Length: 86
Image (cartoon, rainbow, N blue to C red; front, side, top):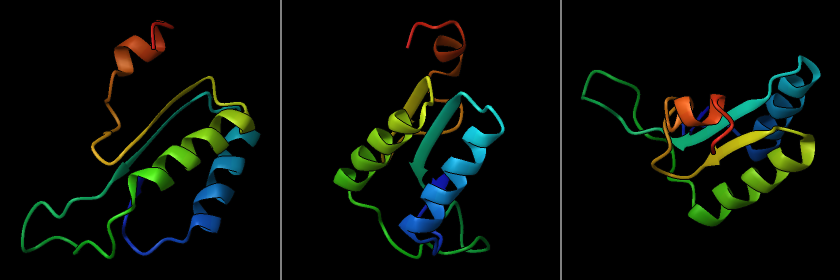
């Protein structure tokens, strides 16, 4: 999930709960960065501490692989995560 587009932390946590209810195992949380003028602007920059806390929440919910940080992207170590190395 990309954060910083106007979502609330409660909404992020609800989506994580919904994902686990559907047996999703791997999760990446990263900061949305506006790629150009014609794209949605960044609503807010999420503090790294909040990414860490959301990562902790994700692990408590049962995600087996979690990458959570401002520069994390959906492909962030995906091959290593799928292989159980991360």
